[in-house]
Length: 461
Image (cartoon, rainbow, N blue to C red; front, side, top):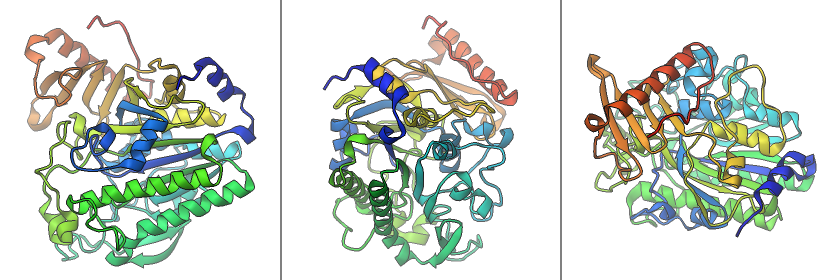
C-alpha cells in the first residue's frame, strides 16, 4: 500500500487533540535482532509481532542506544545519549543497592511533554531507572504505573540462593507505593497480570476518548524466563523460547483489543528491544534459576555478540516494527539508520507536543523519516555510559573501538556485505579508520561540552 507522504506530514502538524494518535510502545527485554520470524529466526515463531511487519514497516537498521537496560531506557525517555543524562554523569545498570536514578530535576522525559497536550500516560512492566520514589515513573510523567522497579533477577536468590548480594524481595509497585513483595511463583504469573492492566488502561481511555501513551515493558524474556502456568513448553526451544512465544501472544492480545475497541486506525505502535540477547552461559543465573536461567549457546545469531556490550552489532542492533494505519506504509522495509533516542522526538511530533528547549536533544524525527523514506541520520554512536564511544557506524561502515588493557584496538567492517562483522578491513582502509575514529573523538568531546553531535555527508566513502 502506498501512502502520500506530504499529505500525511501535514496531517501530523495540523492534527487536533481529538485526532492525535494513541501510542503503544512495547520494549521487549533482552531479545535478539533475529529472534523474530520476519527477521530470519530459525527457531522461534512470532506470528502476532510479524503481523505488525505486514501491517506496518519493518526497520532493519534501528539501534538500541546501549547494550544494557538502564542506559538504553534513560536515552529513550530523554532523547539523549546516556552519557548526557543527569547533567552528564550518566547512568550505568542500576541494582537494588543503588540509590541513584533518572533525575527529574535534571531531565525532561517525553511523557511529561505528552501530559502537557492532554495525553494519559501509563507504564506496565519493568522500569529500571531508579527504585526510590523520586525516580519512579510517577516522577517522570506517568499517570499510571504497575510493575517492578528493576529486573526480575535482582531478587534475594542471586548467587545460588546464598543471599550474598543482600537484595530484598522484588516489589510489585502501583504508582510510587509497594503492593507486595513477590516470590518466584508470583513473578511467573506477573506477565498475565500485566496484560490485564494494559487492557484495562486501553479500555478506560477508549471510553473517555482521551489520547494515551502506553509503554509495555515485558519481563519474561529477561532472566529468569518465567511465564504463566499453561504456557510452558509450547515453543520447543526451552524456557527462553517459551518466553518469546509469550510476548508474541501478549502483542496479539493487545493488538486484538485495539481492533475490538475500534482504536486500531488511530494508534501508533512501536515494538523494539532494549538490547541484544544473552549469548553466553551465566553459571550464577543457572545456579539460581535452573532451566529458567539457561542460555542455549547452540542457537546461532546473525549478528556478532550480544547483551552487555555495544561494540558489536549483536548488543545494540534491534528489530523494530512501526505501525500507524493510513500514515505509515504497510508491508514496507526501511533500511535507514535510526536510534532509540529518535523515539523521543518522534512521539512528540506525532502527538503535536513541544520539544523541550532547555537541553541538547539527540533524537531525530523518525516517524517523518519513515513516511518520506528520507534518512535523518547517517551516523550512530555506541556510547558506554561514561562518555566513551565504543562503536561508530557511518552509512554502511562500522568502526569498533576497544581500549581495554591500556591498548587501543580498531576493527573496521562493511555492514552492507558483512553484517556479522567477521571480516576486519581496517588494515586496507586506514583513511576510513582514522576518519571514523575522529568522529568518535569529536562525539566524546561534544558530550563533555554539552554540544549537539554533528551529522556530516562530507566523506566520500
